[in-house]
Image (tube, rainbow, N blue to C red):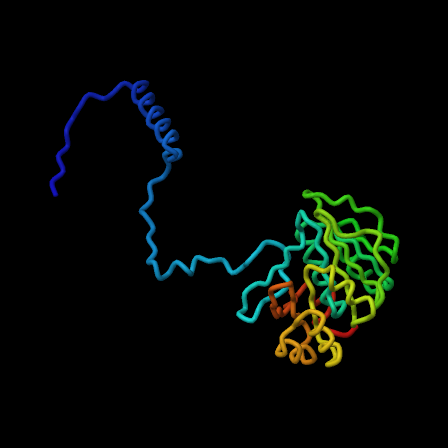
Length: 259
């Protein structure tokens, strides 16, 4: 290739600047943006497009990983009322509370065993950084909003009374049940999400009838390892392994079903 250089009179500086502004304006009108650095085009073969997918299915709180090792996310902060029932251990409820607070939400814990939550309160700045503990029946209105979503954790034993603070816009409620109890069917009916950890064979059979679980799911429940939860909605089922961070282990210890 032969390059031919030609010489021409230098344009007036003001005239050159005006042409540059006009070209920039034309590009903006065409939706092309401002003129910036020039880079080579990036191309990707079609068979590699799947590599661009992010391994998350929603935004929210990472509850753990699924059977394929992908993050399993609970959309706890939402504009509609959201009731969750967790039939399991305190450890999992506390991890969810910690991770929800880390998203910027406030967490209100209603509990009959406040001493079990005090270590978390102290670690988070004495209740000034998003987590507060209340006696059963003493949770005040939380004033939840889109800017300050709230999670209420009800750790009130096997027979929790009806809560004064209920699920509402930007305010979700997680009710922790250590085992099945006479109030469980009512709570399960109103829950939009249910988590089940290791239970006895009799409890598994009862949950199978109540929730329409498959035979395989029912048989798996008595043998679930510590840290594994079967999360259920009306249509979906997913086993999730909660993997604690080093900081969570230092504060709460290793995963456990029993407290």
